[in-house]
Image 1: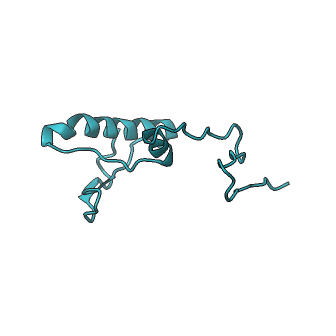
Image 2: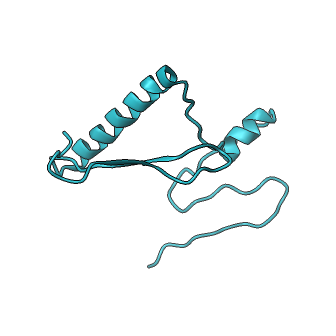
Length: 101
């Protein structure tokens, strides 16, 4: 699935307070979007499965929904339709989007 005739790059980025990020830059042999997504999923599945063999831990910053769950509060429900956003609890700034007509 990876095109071996094109760039294949794995490198470490600058160290941050969250850890050492890596960048994976490869090309698929097929230009179909579904094939690209399958390849990306396979790469991440492999990285997640093998990380502990090298005493590595995968880190992802928590989202606001994660933080609400940790605090024992219900996460904000996701919008039902595109461009329809839920109201903030207790007032506060509201963000509205309108579709161009």
